[in-house]
Length: 376
Ligand code: GLC
Image (cartoon, rainbow, N blue to C red):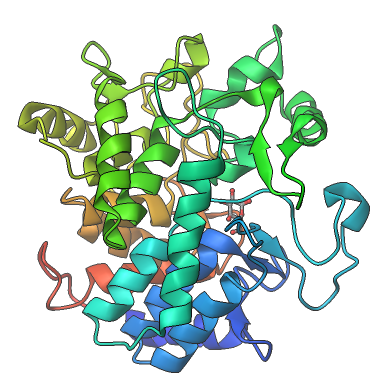
């Protein structure tokens, strides 16, 4: 039997993952709750599927537990508010955030002719303002995260420094991630402001804050972060680094998201960043760029955040102008719309199917700016 076209497959997964409460779960077994950046991507996928009500509804629900100061929690336990309550110290949601992709979602929905209500736009703006105005900054002016989970790149080798002197060890890292929650400093309403035990201002996260700010028209905020990011460029590594600690210099795909940021762009940096996506010993990959540069000791193409290819990163690099749309589509197809996949074989890894793999649909659209990919 012939394989169903990509659009039908994405539609079937999104329908199966849609919840009556008005959002899409990433995967029914592994991720049965609502995640913030996932939902922002889902809203875009729903819009591409011609479902504006679901697109707006999902975005609104992702922002529904926003605090009065603008903080947006990264997981909502809608159907069981007591789930993990002792762990997070609050009921119903987590107590940290994730990349603020709601700015891009608002703008992309509008570009697709979806009417995004003013309250949703205002909530998205407030979310960015929380990060820009209330979140602790690094000495060089970038926004810090309070926990590795806030980056969405949970086990990235950029955090290995915090795993301790023995280096990366999954069991130890699991414990460290738990411990790091205890040192988060919070506002009077509980919003996470700083973490002295993890005072990192990642290049990738800041690129996404700046990009999402720009998408909402918050250009001064975006330009401010973009200027600070420019100072993080490391020519010898052809990437933007996180800081002085050695693991902050590991070459990761998410750091290349600085190419999303509108600056007085140094064209040579952009070219150097993108050139690596075509190099077989760097970030090349038939099914998408690996999350970690192949020459890094940490590189492992089958491992969670340590070398596999992630569809949402490939999508964002494609939006930044990198010619990787065809790889996103091939990987989504070959992997069965997986959470992430092997960059060379396309073998599905993690949760399968995962909703955000549906982002491939955008790269397959005939009108896509970087060339269409046949939808079969
Ligand atoms: C994993 C990913 C994170 C994602 C979540 C739900 O934790 O690392 O980025 O949001 O799964 O898909």
